[in-house]
Image (tube, rainbow, N blue to C red; front, side, top):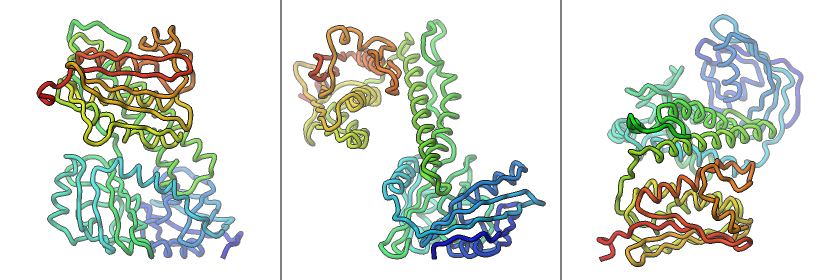
Length: 456
């Protein structure tokens, strides 16, 4: 029942951050959430504080929120290192009825894990493996082992950090658990999504494995010895910058999504600001790295047979959520429409994402954006048209200039996107042009050599 208590509750943890003794009501909450004594701490918020106190040898005190299926609890927690483990003192324990789940936050957390997962699997109600899908070469051997061992608990194939209990554990203990995969140096985080309409997990689980390390930067060829220095970031420095920024973004998203426990709204907002700033900085690093690349005399894109209509549909799919957030409709080439062209796929996609992203950013809410692909006279083209403010004659002359933002400030742009896009288009034997008038929106058109073999 909802209520409060000034009772002081004590607990003890060991050197592996396991709960080895606990008074009520903490003991009851721990057991209801699938834990055991001795056993791993179930509540992520408490587990994080205990780990920090033990690792840094500091006494920590803070207000925490924890929950089970029925209630949400807030309390004042003091954690002090003692021996190999910690002594925990809890006071001002308060409970209240569990509010309705914030579906959008939960969906965001799951969507983020799915996007970052290197391996996903469908589990049965007892966490037995039913189907496995590896999304990259790194975990392909693990996926093969799991496929061969279908029907066994998934935990048989990994090593859980700091856990010596018989497997499988209760799913709440495994959601967010850190683990290691044989042959790989980094830690991984497991995310378990319960399935079924009744008791969570009655219909099985979805397992997602996400690397704790940012994706390794793609090695770029060294610049030619005679190549002049430009205004970009040296490609040897860029990976060094990407890694800490990627880690900041990942940690801020973990905090914002409350994967480590509930947070007050203001701290969630702070984490969202950190994420946005980190993503802006990462985008700037990418723009400056690309700038260094395209201004290198040795730069040459890899031509391939592509379809501009297909690229348009892919770009709209990637940025669809951003458009929907602003109630902007994006009209793309219909299935079956095509505009075969010659160009490097990822560079063409980069251009179209930039054009569509700008259109979404600068178009009024509730407006429409059109992407049209066509082929004529040996030229394949893709036009992105919006209903935004548009450009005057002077702005049209400046829009493709390096670092040009047309007086905009605070919009998260670097002023490099259109400059880079035009340089990439020209490197692929094409053009990038704009038609616009103030108050009448803008039409950016990417033109590339048509794929004559595909059209003949």
